[in-house]
Length: 367
Image (cartoon, rainbow, N blue to C red; front, side, top):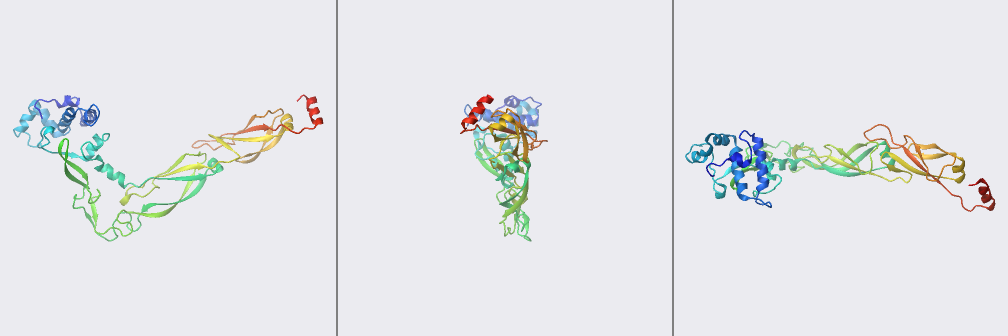
């Protein structure tokens, strides 16, 4: 550590900057100058770390603010009794304390830059214990998608162990505080990195961060707190749902280990095609065939809809390809009110095999 360095200037912050602002500035400098990145600068990277080790600690920052450029000299003369041995990073001689969670927060975008992984922190343990999310494919008919339905779904998943009630211990066995971590779930390890020997806090492997050990693990689940069983749930398929959409059922996925939260269940909807109808958002389309006479003179015909058969008026002189609307006979609007419409395309069949007399009549009519 060189005498007279302006750590605030190195990190690019004001002297009245908050600890959060200092931490944010250090994160930016570390990302910018990390030697493993293209255009990185190892010296500036070490310099930023040096500044953060002082300004990032409230006590050391107060000492630095008090002594200013005499900071190094005062430390060398024993003036900073509370300041742990800390030399220039290039010497890799003295260690300093680092919490793995802080490192993971600061360097989350870089990865294992110090020779250890930030995944050793609490966030890793939390993710590992939460139950796994599940996804299933659910088939529904065209009509069920329009009006909704109730489905019974059966599947196998990890559930909370009924024998140990999810705590992983054999009922009646003794549960003790982990001797390796003293119940904290964290242990300190000394690890050499490009910055020197660092004391890093990591998840205790003896208890997997739980802080407890069991005299006897559960005989059914082996201590995990979960067991594989068949599950049956009833699900309401909302009216108006479309093909490919997903329903999320919170906490209906697999159970988490040792009482941790369960994952979610995602149901992906597959709507079976219907040869009668075609869906267009919340509208329904279909096609009906009529004769030449019906088109010319008009008629009332029966048309099939999702509500059943209805009467449709064919106006006189209807041309092939004309589209008629049945208002409110479409799909129920998901998360809304009302329904779409049903559009019927009228296709006129041109007569074939006409007799001479029929042709004469058509010519006389000017058709």
